Image (cartoon, rainbow over all chains, first blue to last red; front, side, top):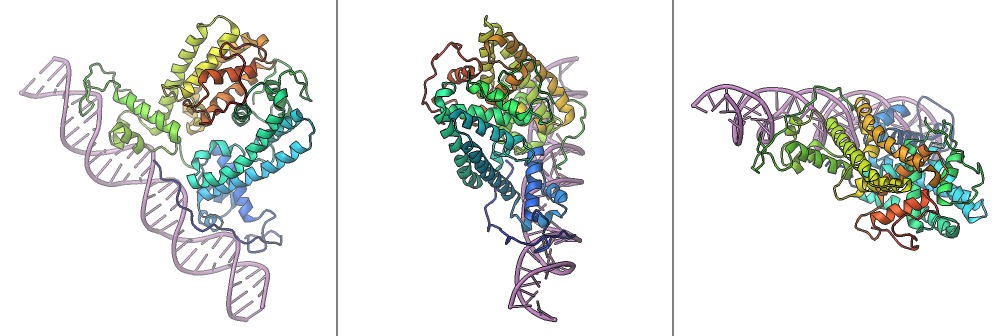
Length: 233
Length: 233
DNA sequence: TTGCAAACCAAGCGCTTGCTTGGTAGCTTC
DNA sequence: GAAGCTACCAAGCAAGCGCTTGGTTTGCAA
């Protein structure tokens, strides 16, 4: 087996900086609009999603940020810590967004729909959230990092679970835990085939899934799902 | 980017052998019950599924087979060809099994159920099929190999599509292509959480999914899905 | 008995990988 | 204006990777 998962050293967290202004170099306070650390994080997230963790080299990430590979380790202690940071940030941000989206709705079923739409946004949205990484690259994390991220993941999942339980009488008759797992399969799997620029909108996709889990319930938009449409590309 | 996907050389296919009898070494005709090539294939499939393609080294595979890493290349030209061979064999075998399972049923909905059960079998069954690899490790294949495997994958998918179209009036009102993609998400995703040794049987899981895609239809076994059950571990 | 091919070993090559080290440029602070 | 900090470069190391090479063992066929 390829020896992954090194032991953790001292956690790195360069002091936050203030000023702006763009230079050839990102020095102490003349940072880019997005700080150097954030730019590394974004580049890493994008590359991890697009090509996978193992297929992405630290040299790739450094190149897109515009620095040398060694300089990455000024911001992060290891490549794995970079993955953990991406996962941590992504799941924290999305738990927040999801909760806000749910609270904006009154009905139980409408809340489930809001959660669903929010999750699809996190996967396909223009903000380029890397939510799928939590599933697809889970085993690229070492056990210690897994345990740490799992705490955030559980918080995210508990929001889902209570929303599903609250709407249980309007959903397909099924244990909420199983329903959630099936739902996650559908949303995560959509990363492999759904193309945001295609003919199927994210709202329409949300409706299709709602049709499955809440049969007979009008789901708001696009009530009768038109047949014979294609989603390709 | 990590330089994968080398060019193809001459395809290797050692002549098939006949006799049996176990020795310390697998020579021309005194092969193990499963030929050496098959044992390599099985070991590779198992390791690819368990730890991922990138995390599996050729030394790992060789060790579980009981040979040295260099000897692997007597059977396969490259590690990627090994992955391709696994995918090819798996999708060919499962297309066959699935078609047989479907033809054993008369009704359109029963056929869909048979396909579904067959796919779940391929993912979780005791035969240890590596069906999930086709999704999870798809991008580990180079473009050329992808094109070759895609032919088999398309055959598999077309069986699904025609079954779904035939049963369309008894399924959730939705384009069959989209329904298939959502279904595949549920089945493939189950690899991440479903445990065959748990309290939820594969038949019961099949029923839960059928409940979603064919609401109001009695699905054969286990008609009213009991609530409040847990599937964990 | 010799010839031959398949199956494998032993050794290691060349390359890429994540990461380290020692030093420097630019900015802030006192 | 010196100290001190962050951000970065330049160079390269050790380890692990897929894969190659040359030779040996084994069984079978002629």
